[in-house]
Image (cartoon, rainbow, N blue to C red):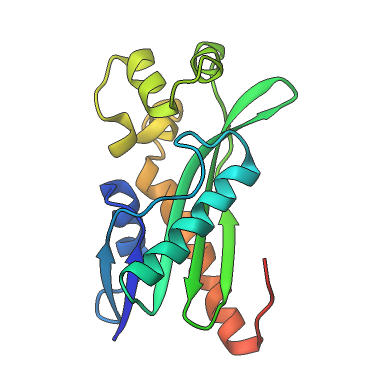
Length: 176
């Protein structure tokens, strides 16, 4: 049985990994590791690097077979702030794959909070009057009226990671 280390203690992200990877085939452990980027990533590039950093650090810290990092961030496109999400999977052989998820435009008031230096989770709590948005439905859950929550969004990314990794194991690796 392979050990998969998830580089977070966020239940929505752990649930995403558990939804995709069978606990009959994998032993899933979670641990908080640093992303190596700012607490609020402000671009696709920074968010992607944070996911890769978490995957590699989780792999090493847990002495696992596979590390998974899931990172939420924001990015500015044509003057508009957007939600962005990235995931990465790293293994002991040096294989690293990455994938991005949903993009949603953030309301202008939320963008103003981001520009003031606040984290998206804190801004969304103030915007909605709800607590623990980042650990529950996430901004995506709020902005899709509950149709897609944070765990479901990250599950899609984990599916992309698992599929890429399986394909690479069968066909040879490349670097991201």
